[in-house]
Length: 287
Picture 1: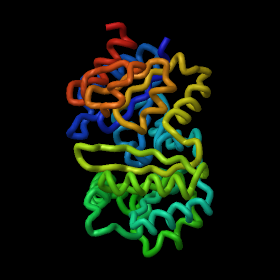
Picture 2 (picture 1 turned 120 degrees about the vertical axis):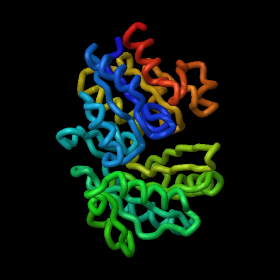
Picture 3 (picture 1 turned 180 degrees about the vertical axis):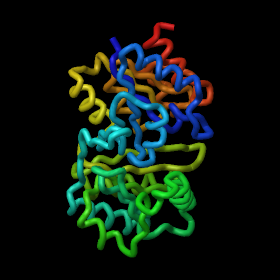
Picture 4 (picture 1 turned 30 degrees about the vertical axis):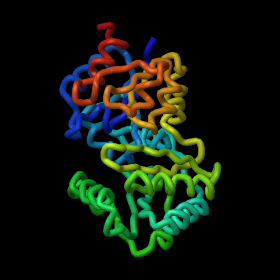
């Protein structure tokens, strides 16, 4: 029996306009009323997932930073946090900068979280847009949410770092992923979220053994549940481990082609067709 439901955000729970369809909200509430724990499992940092979690009034902690952090939205109670060792943080920044990448460093997991950056390349439009979006999203908290500093190396040594990301067009990010893996080895987890139609890739560098699957497994174990009790819905490569872990894995109709081709995964409609609600109705509510 399904007792824990994990929902990816972008491309899954959210439609193409970045909104939660009313049908999805209704289905989630019905699932919770049926005794199911519902969580968001996202690559986003906690602060960026927080407004959505608060909208949904979730009954479980958010699994964010691709599984490195489990944290309640309402109370800000930290259930679990994995931290990148300081020496590894400096290595990640060194390797990324040597390649020409723009590092975004997420710190302070015991608060809402703070993002530090020191440079954004003139041609890195996606990161420029993300910084602008994040500042708009957090309003009065923007200064606490996003900090521009002179040099990351002079700031992050005294911080608890949970997540470092690089992003850009697909071809150079694929090369940077190879370089990071070759130079950092098993000292980190590296997850890629790829949107070929947008020519955009997000690389998340995390503490070792951090994935949505490990975060979801920790949450399940806290509630004495196993993978048999877990349903997960996603659309991209950073969802793969989570989908492989869950007994009931569902991919969106707009998912990456390789995920849609996997016969081990159930399929639902796209994020613009209330695919999450359709899957909840089918697998949890018996509709």
